[in-house]
Length: 477
Image: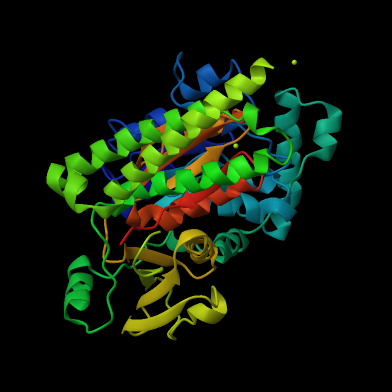
């Protein structure tokens, strides 16, 4: 098997280009050899298997763990907690024919999701033409006897043998590209063949070409204040405080509302955001030119005056037996990534509230206008989740980062850790919901090019209510 892998990687020319590996269905038997073959000095390794065993030490030829272990139920196939497009190589030796075949698409789509563009899926399978299948059954029975598999497990074992052509067809249907490179084990009566397929690379428009198009193309532009996005969380925090105060009054008297906790959160966030804006744009621009800062200070003083009075009144009661100016739109520059040679209808396919659609490059590049506030949030999610893949290049001429607020529910530490380990973003503020101590709110800065991918990744966790996208913050004009 090692010789097969050396032959394949020699043909592919991938030595020195692979860092992160996932091994599925064993204890990491070939990881050490793969790292030597591919000249890997660092990088992550994930071992995906049903459970850890003492025999893994022999299988991986190491007393110590060689990667992060992820338990996996091969009888009920689900996704795994590995970030999308973060892996260079996935290996699975003699495992596909043992999986529930009605769930095989789930398994292959999972592998496709975690692989980076140009990432490889290396798998080994029998070339199970009809005359060979009886011999394969006998070989499996003998193997099970030798390894001590009980009769019931032997009787229920899935043996979905296919020919190599059929296995290739399965992976191609998911979207993999066949490299047409394979290696057959010599003198093997069970006809084992190692195959490698590749996740195709998305062809982006060249950055210089995009900049030239945006500079020279005549189209209606919407420009935002550079620093305004830093102050939008504060504006929306006030909105949510008022909304939660109103909802709170539906079931509890106003004199129990946590006024001072919310006030503390407001000024802590104000200090954090202002500090970031000053570091990024300078003291004068952030404090004296930016209308958003002046507005938030004014609102903060008013909020403090109101909440301090209400808090004092509430304290007394408990001793006895509750205009902004400018356009209401953001402009998104969207790149369509698929190869369908026709212009995309955003109003019909995404949201009818999208307007002022301008085609900057036929079939590929668009400027669209979307309403701000919650509608902005909703439309971005629809764009991210649409079957047609898009790339977000700018929002109202801002191309760097945008802030997004998430809620991690039910004290889910695994989800919190997942967020903190994300690349292409950083956490700038975190607080516990004063009315729900099991909910942690996090404000992130996300690189604009990765926003739609991040939204797609978060959506899978919204379905199990472990994470909620609260707001994608727009700009202040």
